[in-house]
Image (cartoon, rainbow, N blue to C red; front, side):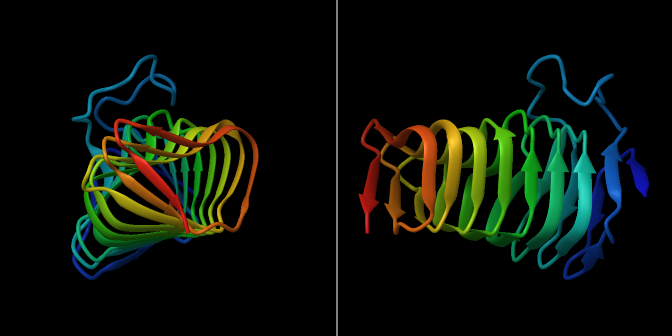
Length: 212
């Protein structure tokens, strides 16, 4: 079933929003004539979903969102399929779990962390997306058991306040698996596989990647 969304859906505190497999497609403000906008859009476009503290979002598909899901605190996102999100598929807050989800053809970032803390990202799949995971400020971020295919930089930690631990991820085709910049840190606990990647590690401006 397809449901057209004309304005942001807010999931209330401690509520579980179960989409039961429905496809939610954006038709609100700023909707382009096609899913893919002709150029990068404004950072100020409305999200499709906002999760209030303690809310859970699960079992649905998202299509053509200009901005996807905004989390706040103590949120869970489970079994979501994101397609053709123009800005950020998920903007991450504090104590957030993202699992068993898929991300396809995201034009910008799949998972964006600007003020994130205590984040678990596990058992997700990322296809044909430029920046699947980006932490500008991401403290205590765990990334495990994910699959990346045809990406630019699969996992990027940026800034001195960002620290990410990774393990058991599989990566196929792309530019770089782990990228650390501007004094950010990544701890690689191994496992998984890397195939067809130009550079396993990319560091710049004091970024540090440590094999554990």
